Image (cartoon, rainbow, N blue to C red; front, side, top):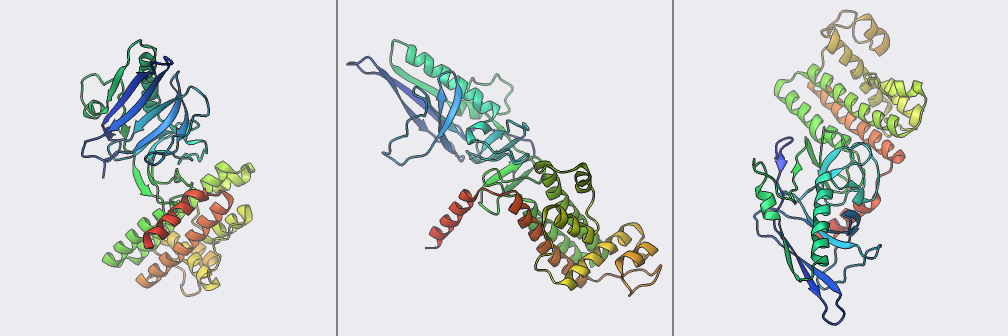
Length: 382
């Protein structure tokens, strides 16, 4: 795994622009060729750009011998851009200015959920490359002589970390902090922090982190130490983080009163109150299809979390009054069992799924990439 905030070099290769003049008409034309011989992944994309160096639109890939679709603006030039040495591309959100890495054509900012045409998410380095590329094209097409222009991206790749001046076409990316493949569409994302939207389909990754990272880690510690009280405390804390992330996004994306916004910024350590908040504010039922006795159990464990966290495990008047637990007396040390801790983890996984589904019923995902992944899976099974 690439370390955090490490510069990632270009994948290298060579781009050749062959300029030719038709002897009969005197009209100039060009051909593009890309070669790559380095032992690294490389992803090639094409786009149209205006001669002034402004990116215009992506070009859909075509098969060998297929005709490349013409640009929407006559006179735009075809530009080749290749990935970093891991096969990914850096992107920059024009609204929040957040940077991340993913595949070539994202549709959604993973941080602020700004949705825009993919060309809008090109990074500063990629836009600088396009300007250099178009300037070289201008010079070649204005020249009286034909010839071949070579853009040596191998030299760009070799310049990573070097103290010498960078080549004119220098492009590199930077690893971020959390790399994940979207559980809905499979797309790779490398983002700052942990929680984010998939930049391809817009699915939040909070549920995947909770179920695939947080819960297994708590179970592993529980099985090794049998400290069930610690497991309950960690489970409630993990759910609080999960609920807080969804609440933060809802508060950002949906206009609401100051009172409601202030509530969403608070903790979610009281399960019944959290359940009521999401139901009353957004019609999200986090207890959907969970038995009433299981919901009562979750609420009880949330009350016990407070006792384990702040009272050294001794039941106080607040716990006895608010939890409804008649099995303990005032000042009695509450004992937790590994079985009850595992049960809580199982149930919180279901509750978290309900919250995730309810969130996306309000903040929809892009279905096309998810459906495409499903079709690919069906083809792979045939």
